[in-house]
Length: 447
Image 1 (cartoon, rainbow, N blue to C red):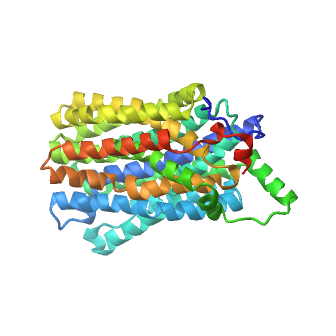
Image 2 (spheres, rainbow, N blue to C red; image 1 turned 60 degrees about the vertical axis):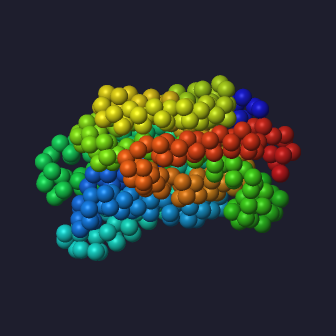
Image 3 (spheres, one colour; image 1 turned 90 degrees about the horizontal axis):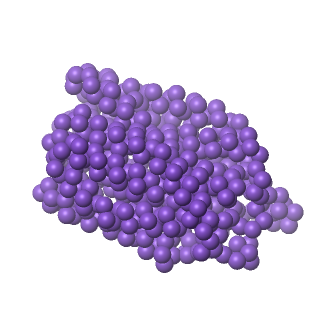
């Protein structure tokens, strides 16, 4: 196995510094917005979506309905990922990346301006679902596009570092979302439910305009331009990227799908489910629960960058395997700490899992996925693997975890088994899956 998961031979290793720097920041801010939006909605689902949009049901059912609307955004992600990644592979990375951030920004700000059920009745949850669909459609290609963009702009010797920096946008977005909800939650309950809950959603417009400004000045990646030029020189007819993916890389697609399962489940348990679990099931005061999530996500925000440095030293596969083992070993102690209701134990366990476990898998899955697929359909391959898993595994995770806790009458055994099973699936995919581009011979890469 190549220890650096190097790219295909012949790819450029000398990059334009300004263009590469712009690509990294474009990817970082887009990922930050994606995860700010999703973590924001996850925090809202655990605290205020139920009483605002499902006021006529009991609290436990309102929580399930809130997390069901959270999962809705993931159902449409594969469709958005495939449509926008098709655009990215056929027309160019830049227009695809602009489209993703526009869709996410419009949807999140729209949710912040949405009337509640008290004002427009049944239309409120229906419109909420519509905005979640728009948000999910755009987000379906965001991280896949960011990973593709950065991996094609940066030298393979430093690729792990820069991909890790981009993936820092995920815990960074979760941190900002939790921070914003922590501030508004300090207000009296009636003020929070009346208007203050809208502030974190509307503030996302600032991030949206910043990301849009950066992306408007992007250039196409050198690798993508090389592929387009080579195709024209051979007078080849442009092929459908999705068809090429299924024809040439079905095994890589399956390996990619399962490789992110452990990361997705663990991440959404920590960033979304834990807040609801601590407040509704354990009975921890809301501010203590928010503080625990805030500290763990804040300290975990830089972990993917540190993990990226490790990727550049030992390779993405080895770090991903390590992250899976951490998830397997740490899940039961994590839930024991949460179940205790002690804010110090809960915060410590969540921080350790976020920094070591999620930090390792966040840094490694990005490089691992981009090295599974060749340039001509890389965007589509990464989007398909990530977003199919997102729809089937990640999106329903808070809902599944809530249902498992309810089925066990508050016990943690079933939800612990669920997280461990996801980590085992990722471990198996990486150990027994397929070779990355860095592991293949030149003739295999060109095929």
